[in-house]
Amino acid sequence: MEQVDFFNSVAHNWDNMIEINECKINYLLDKLDIHENDSILDIGTGTGVLIPFLNKLNPNGNIKAVDISDNMLSVARKKFENLHNVSFDLVNVESEDINSKFDKIILYSMFPHLENKTNTIKKLVENNLTSNGKLMIAHSNSREFLNNVHKNTDARVSNSRLIEVNLQKNLFEEANLNVESAFENDELYYLVISK
Image: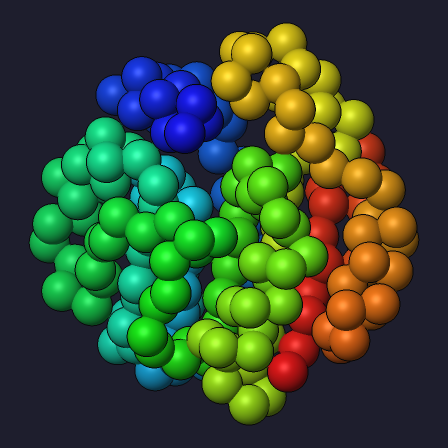
């Protein structure tokens, strides 16, 4: 639960700590192929960084935003209280079940914080993704940059790391997941899994 403590402690300053690169976020979301009226699960929503982007692509579809940090969700709720198609819930996707299906699931800037990465993604694909749905793991920074940030920020997140994207792809494929694309460079890191 140390990570929860970390995210609760930084929640009210989070939006000042991070960089939001609209071009990169739009580029990444384009890979998810969001359609009008899709139901979307935003895992690790934090302060709701993706919400305006998801809502613009899908103004009438349901967006469920979940996080392990109560304080992060509190900030997000205040920011987006005017959006009626967005709900926020305190959920740990590793240990709790979500009893709904979604057309799109996205883990933006949160995948390294999962403890059981492959098992959690497999569970989400099997239990929460509609047939023909897509799950995306996305970062608008490089693996090296993110790993250094986590290593040097706080002991509670120092072990939150990404591995080389093709190694991650292989781990998913060994778990019988269908990896549609896997890519990284010095700007981005993403994988798309389809059902």
